[in-house]
Structures are given as structure tokens and as C-alpha cells.
Image (cartoon, rainbow, N blue to C red; front, side, top):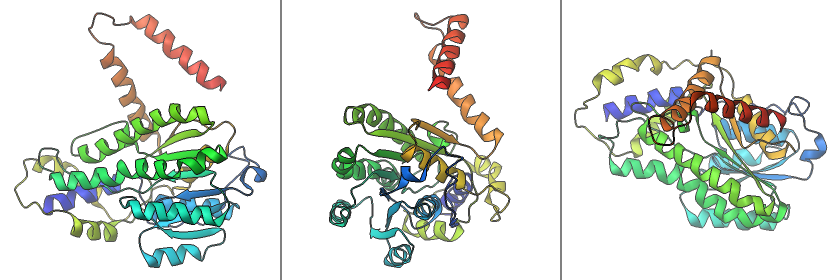
Length: 331
């Protein structure tokens, strides 16, 4: 259990999940939005009781959007429902009966549904050859099958409104690293889910986006300990002592010097309401994190193009990258 505990804390401190509440309203001018873009719109957010989900929910509600805020505990549901323009609903993304009950609530409320934000997620940190299958299944059930279940259930409402779907991934869905395997597997799957869904929903005039946050302010020790109590204990000695030791510095509790996650809430809002919404939103809090992610993406292109019958020469590859950048800038 000790090694899993250390792994969970290390990854949590590197992840985008937070435990702070930022009750700001959106800077519509900055996002190139008008108040009329948000009027009479309703959005459902999973995992809205804390962290990034709570930040997204409060920012949208404070800006006039009606928010269905999904949570698992009655205390959180009651608290969310006290907020103006917000209704807390019971929603565990691993339980189909709760998902269908949430669909019924949204239908009965009669506001329609413009947007769906698949935010609920869990994380832990462990070597792939040592993590238990039970814990791996838990990770995938929440992080990967959760968005699939919820999107499938709410798709008719989103299609009816020609609305938006926004999936919260992570920079760990772009760049994997040692001991991040279980979490990165779940987020790489979210990336693939988002890309396929993007093309499949085009025929219904529904836009899909994926948000890839980096490392923002966090205070997650209490919740991590609770989650660990539900995880399968593995007391076998680890073969990765040096890897854990190298990451020990990331276990510091004080994250007050990190940026607030308002940038993530802004990215989601742009994805949900902007007429020029993008498919992919990298939300890095610093240049080094942005560089790390882009380098990882470039490395994959280089590896894919290396030493095979149909490899593209460097000049052609450079021209194609330049053309893609120009096309993207013109959108």
C-alpha cells in the first residue's frame, strides 16, 4: 500500500485535478463571446463537486448558464443546488441507473441541453507490471467508460439542440511517462474517443472538443487518502524504488504557488459557446509544460516517419507542417 500511496500523491500533484473553488464569472470579451451566446443555455458537468469540475460549473453559472452539476454525495448535491443557476444531481458515471435518472431529470426540467462536459475522473500512480488488474479496471471504468456511458445517454438531447460535447483529458493523454501508465492509458483512450466522436457527430451539427490541462493548483491529500482506502492493497515490494525516490519532491502539500485553474474553465467555455470553437485545447500553466507536451507530439511524428519504405523526406515533412500551421491559423 505504501508504494501505491506515494504514486497517487505524486501524480495528483502533477495533475490538473484541484480542490479549490473559484466563483468567478467568465471574461466574455477575452473569450470573444457575447452574453447572448450563453442565454437560455443549459450544460451538464460530471464530477462537479470539486476541482476543475467545480470551477467550470461556478464560472458558467455565474455567467448566466444553467448548470446541471453531477456529484455522488448528497452533501455535495445539496451544496451545489444552493448556487444560483445550478442544480446538483446524483451522478456516478460508473452506474447506468444514475446516468439514466440524470437524463430523466434534465428532460423534466425542460431547458434542453446545449452542452455536456465529461469531467469526472480518478487517478493513481503505479508501474504497469505491478498495478493490480482490479485497480486498472477501476481507473478505466471511471476515466474511459464514464465519458462513453454519459455521452451515449445524453446524445439525443445534444443532437436535438445541435450542441457541444467537451471531454476533459490531460497532457498525460499526449505524453506518457514511467509510472504514469494506468492514468495515461485511460486518457489516451479519451483522446481517441474524442477524435472519433468529433467526426461521428458532425453529421448532426454537434461539435466535440477535448481539453488537455496541465499542472494547476491543488490540495488533494484528504481526498487521495479516501480513494486509497477503496483501492486494492498491494504489499509486495516494488522494483521501482529509484523511480519513486526521484519523484519524492513532488509530494509537497503546499501548491499555493501554482496557477489557479480558471484557464481550464475558460477553455471549456470557449469550446461550449464560441462560434470558432477548436477541437483541441492544450491548457498548460507554464511554458515548460507546454513545451514538454508539444515535444512529445513531435517525437511521435518523427518516430512514425522513421526508416520505412514510405518515409517522407525532411523538406517535404517541414512543408506539410508549415501548411498545417497556416491552415489552423486561418480557422
